[in-house]
Length: 209
Image (cartoon, rainbow, N blue to C red):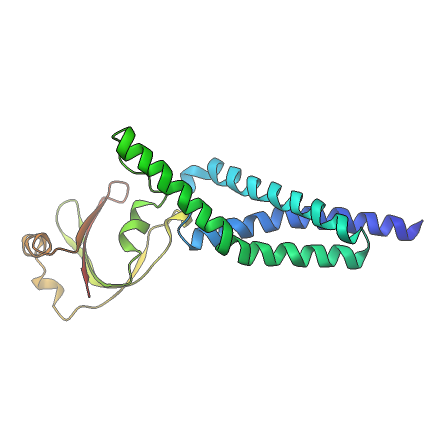
């Protein structure tokens, strides 16, 4: 009797771990692949996605466990299989399916509905996530230079906090007049301007090979 109770408790705990934690693992992997991305203002959508993955893991747990039973060994094997699926299956199967789904939706929006394509990335991530070197010039709304440098690191927008690490440029900051920078940036093919109305700053970004 005691053994059966222990197995049931172990099974319930395993279900909770598998459905909850592993669902977040699916989301975390897809987020790193830029397949999904929800900022602080879209927590409900993020919870919904994680809940869907949790449900998938719960279904897999019940299905796989029918082959191994509720013994401690069987539950450990089941959890191991689901963990492997969440790591490799998310990359090999779920990610391509999501990309295919986005492609089809964007095709319908652009060709049939004459609407712009959708992108789940935030504006900051869209601009900064590049493998090229990037010069960054930061001005306030009065066109006063705040800082300038090579982009070293920037926090993901999902953290809801905006700070970046810059490496110094060869030029002196006293020589970086707003008009000079704006003219220089406008002549570059790989350039962007990020306007942050909340922080009241403008970031002029130039990508270089």
